[in-house]
Image (tube, rainbow, N blue to C red; front, side):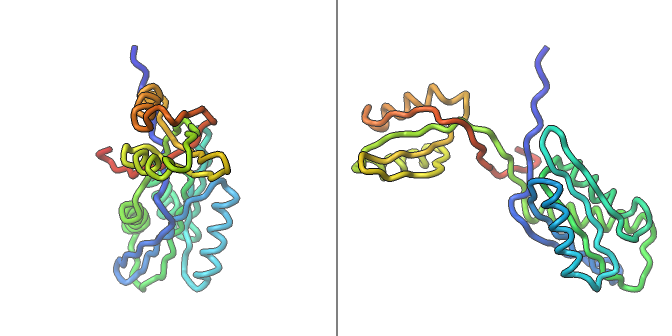
Length: 219
């Protein structure tokens, strides 16, 4: 029986914010990429301090990959109308290592439970759409050794071929180019490198790292 496909490791492309207005109430969603719960709580504290005069600063975050930690807070809104729908958007979109804080300035018109759920969940969803998501993919790290005369051209050829060039190290004896290659493509990469360099460059394994690629529902 075929194994189910692994869920993509998704997070936000960058920190950012998005604002909507609903019946004169302002809802400002702040999103940030965080590495753990402590970083999420630090970001929340910073937003609450910055927007100290707002009626509510409701929060939700998801951190971790396999063992995820999730938290949410309604911050004075009726139970289940703010933090929970915010967290549900993060869950449904499959993002992790992400914290959302929605600041609300009350406009004088009561929205009701349904209106609050739609406003808080909606502004987080729109913020994710506007900022964008990336998928983090593990790749093998290879170090390509090249002489100084070939390094610049080889770097350009690596990038043009779609390989993830991470860093270059210039040394007296030559240049070491760090490259990320998906595991299934390793054999093809060595063949490509031999042809591209005329056999003058070699690559040795040096561990793993993650690359980030734009992601959408259609990916």
